Image 1 (tube, protein in one colour):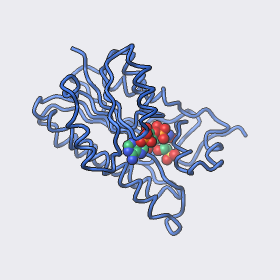
Image 2 (cartoon, rainbow, N blue to C red):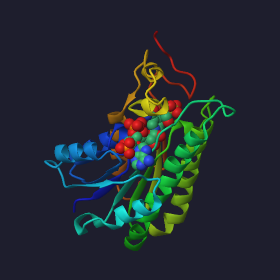
Image 3 (cartoon, rainbow, N blue to C red):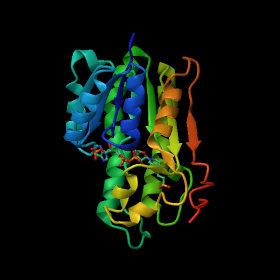
Length: 250
Ligand code: NDP
Ligand code: 8X3
């Protein structure tokens, strides 16, 4: 039987590429994000490959998140795979200069939003005693870098929550894992630097990971046999050694 996956943050970058990768393999899709025009365009593109339903909500809004997932039509109600991907960095400032709005955005979206979506999906997985949750963490969840403070904190939280989920959902046979990328060339830096030109320089002088690279790894993780769970995976571009060392040819 065809599986159904819910992907948050499916309107760009890693989430969008994962939607394309899953569609290629015939997985039914529930695609989530705030930008409705993009959801419509992606739905149109993928509908020739698989069944696609879109949900337009902001993961910061607890009620709307729960309602959106509750509103799924019968054909999409049983979610086999949850990809908690929605998130971003907002700002890159030393802690003494950071913006409270940026801090709120990162904790509310990357951490609390992930929890709201999980809260809406997990009960049906525990009833069925099956399911697979992949949380998109980051190398920033394993290592703190200068000015990364709150973003790194939010991604460390994602990793701790992932471990907690894996422990608590173990009796139900639910797989839980984290995939933690280093530098991936997406809209991430545009969002982090609020459209500032500095975003253009982040991926210059080396070959960064592409969204498709991560999407393929996510598909690999969800397509392992029932007894295999990829619990935690760190992936860097070859040019990147850790959060601060990147070999650039400039
Ligand atoms: P993008 O900016 O391209 O994608 C972010 C996605 O998250 C968009 O689809 C956006 O959709 C969604 N999103 C953001 N805020 C909200 C919100 N409040 N409610 C609902 N959806 C939201 O970046 P990436 O693809 O790179 O990022 C995806 C994930 O990967 C994030 O969790 C990020 O932290 C992580 N990551 C990224 C790395 C990188 O270098 N790019 C490296 C490591 C991890 P919309 O705006 O339409 O709502
Ligand atoms: C994104 C990777 O190094 O830009 O999570 O924080 S980094």
